Image (cartoon, rainbow over all chains, first blue to last red; front, side):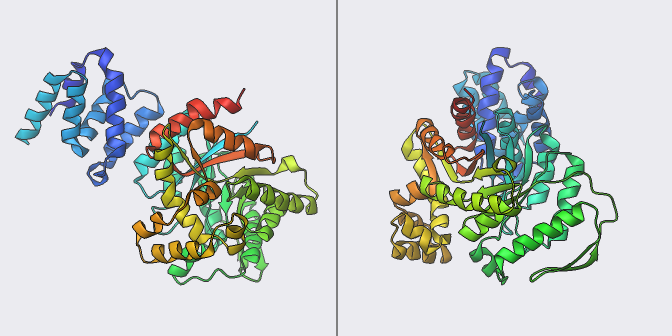
Length: 96
Length: 331
């Protein structure tokens, strides 16, 4: 899935709540072993520099959330009334 | 003004711990303490990541012990960290946990000597000296780094018993008091002051930190739920005089100890009483925690360490401490 392209299409107003929900999802996930260290480091670097809600930060968070908690990530998008995006994530996951 | 520290156990992967460490730094915490237990992830690897991803927070092992890692290796790790994050590194050292040491066949030999000697060796070798040392527990025969260590690294002593508290006041730059109840903290600080006075130091020269188990949540039940597992371990590791001071039945403590040894978590956690939670943790809503911390401040602590478990949801709990508790003490 092209996470960056998906993130670019997310309305700016939704990015902060989305970032918050995704980070909660990733931190509370029990599927730690699915997190690639390179991706974890990217997230930490963005968090350190307060840029987790930028497109690059959100892209990394979304990739991690999908890897660790696919179903819950789809739920988050639905809750935030981003159903079209939820659908795209579901379709992409079905293909892989 | 009281400083706030925070403790993490690297049981979780480094990226979770470091996420929380960055959050703590942004939220006004000044000290980060990473526990050192052989069954968790490595303390120095975790601290290295903390050094890279944080900018100003002071950090160190909280605490390591001299039995599993020889003091010269501890010194080596600490001075290397200090090159990575100059003037942000401290050493926290204590005698360790008897049960954990016994589980790997290591005897907690002469803990007072061990700490005093380990600190002396640490200070000598980190100041660039060649260390010839003949102690009761440790011996070195000209140990010296092949590089020049930079700066003087503050040493905090983790202590609970009266003699160790006194020693901590005497030789430490800081003391990590493993207590949460006002009765215990008051008693501990009096012991520390005795040591400070023996060393003819000023009280302000020693950073006195209360290092309790802590759990905060807007819902008291949720705060308590998170505190129970940690409190059960504290009860199991507490000497009988400490239990007596809080009116805790030693048979109840034995029951918890046995259940923990048998990995019977349900029985261990089920035996934890509200009195134990009150005695061995600072636990509750933000307002309750503020009240408890304020109660400890009057005894003269200069740092309050938010110890494990912090809360049911760690991110949320750090947020509560940063937004509601720390600002209360900044006014």
